[in-house]
Length: 91
Image (cartoon, rainbow, N blue to C red; front, side, top):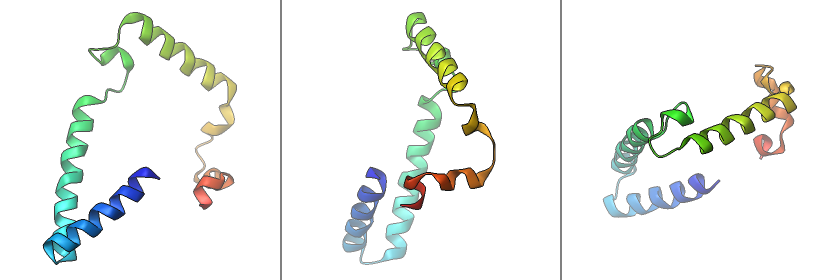
């Protein structure tokens, strides 16, 4: 929700600045690609791959993840229609 709210404000500001929605979308797209590359570089697939996560933190994260997976196996059905049972999706 925060990204959608800020994105709308940023796009409106860019349209005002450049006097063109096309240019504004190109600038926003380039910014999004830069943010995506940063996220790809910084975010890891596994906590142990991140240089600033120590062994105790990684063990805590892994234990928490294992507990979540054991508690709610119904969320892993793979059926896209299951998402429609959440109010946030309808919102």
